[in-house]
Length: 94
Image 1: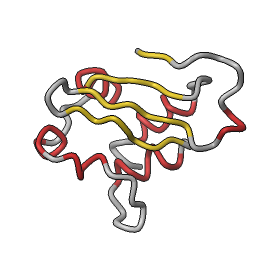
Image 2: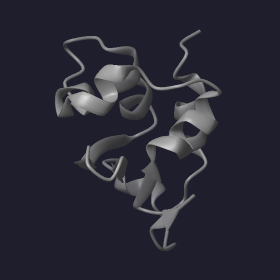
Image 3: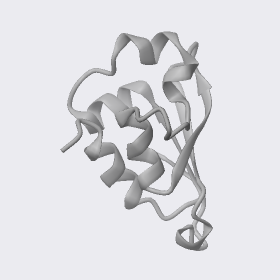
Image 4: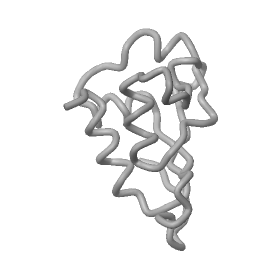
């Protein structure tokens, strides 16, 4: 079990094509703080599954990619890559 499984589970419930979360939202979902590197480096939010980062695998397995990361505003947008699950609902926020 990964520490990022709660994020994967949350994303799997999203019906819309995208979801914007603050880093604080993510920490609430995870039940623990994000690592310092998430606040400092956009590379932490990369979508390269070949690297094997647990956080990347969580959102990719849920059918999303991380995009529009703002280290200044502490926000990230997840966009669905599996269009078949997006339905007709609008994008959302938490």
